[in-house]
Image 1 (cartoon, rainbow, N blue to C red):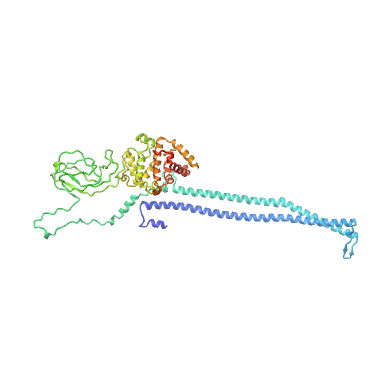
Image 2 (spheres, one colour):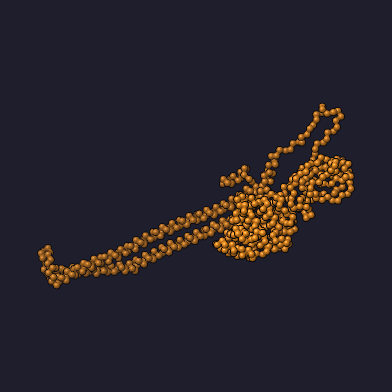
Length: 582
């Protein structure tokens, strides 16, 4: 909320920037909601696992108690049986001695005195019979407890424990399946939020990816809108400053004061015939002459023309000025220095003839304006399209192994962008990219990027244009046919073996693809040599160029994103082992 308030404040930048930033923040809100749902699901899993653990512990203790009780009953019955057996054996031995007349056992003293041998024998027999009955009962009880333990108690406890184990295992497996499903749902939801799939229904609204949202920021339009919003704050132009002499100081016969300087002043003279005109990008005062000899139609002048007779100029002339000339003409026959236009804002110009020097002349004065770059009036028609055309077609049409757009863009970056931080990572202005793209589609042979004004002094737009060219190729630079071979090579862990495998696949590329890839890799190697300033290492360049050179990360290729970058990183790291520098 604080960030939203800050970006909507008057001190923050507005326009497309804040609109796209709002949209990006809403996208991150959806990602945060996905994370919140994932957290709630994990918390519920924690509660379920705790409940499962408590139930398992409760069942384990219950059946442990039941099992120990059954074992104790059987043990106690066997102990009682052993005790009865010992008593029974002792009485049997005493009875046997009494019956055989053993002297040691014949003397027994009772309450009424010493018993006789028959009495003692009868008494022992009675006790022996009681002990025998008790012993038999204890044996039956112990046997019954043993049978119950073996046939009932133990199987019942084992079965109950097995059920508890199965329930615990099933619960754990279920929770792990839910965890995997929640992770998949989280990652898929975040991925679709960042890069949504195109809708199957053409009438459905199109959801923009995070990259598309950011690329739609138009810095120039934002700046123009900001400046337009402050037009009302500019003070209105006051009247021109001029000297007015007081009437008391004027001579009695005062001549009329010359009229104040006006944007346009015309002296009377004969009508002039209309002649075809051309416009100069930097607007200059325009001079027209009275009738004279017929002249051919005027044409483009690459330098500042001189008006009138050099020896006796009819008006004061300005000192020569330096002009930033555009590197391309907007018409096929125009020279490269200036651009011609039939709808320009420059004033019409007609050269002065020697015969008209003494005649009255008319002129109109307009403010000069310097052109910062190419004239962005209307996009030229695509006479020789470059974008969306295969490398084979470009080679057959232009007879150049490396397309001219690739050569010009690399040349511009080599001259003006090697030390620019984030080159090939930062996007240029979308409007600039579209203008330059239209120029290349019109005729790439007349574009000259040695003059930075031809690309609006925005080298990031040139870098973005180069990536867009590769991205719009019908078949990627590294070709769909070789895609699986490159991915298989990227999976090799050994650096030397992986380099040799990638090198082998590169050697099988078509000739235009091989030549273009070689030129691009040598150029990117020069870029990464300036890593200390531009912060673009081989890995960063590989991440930036992998989708453009191998195909966008869509469909099954999403899982290959890291492998694609690894292919490019391997090529850039081993530039001079794969390609000759000369």
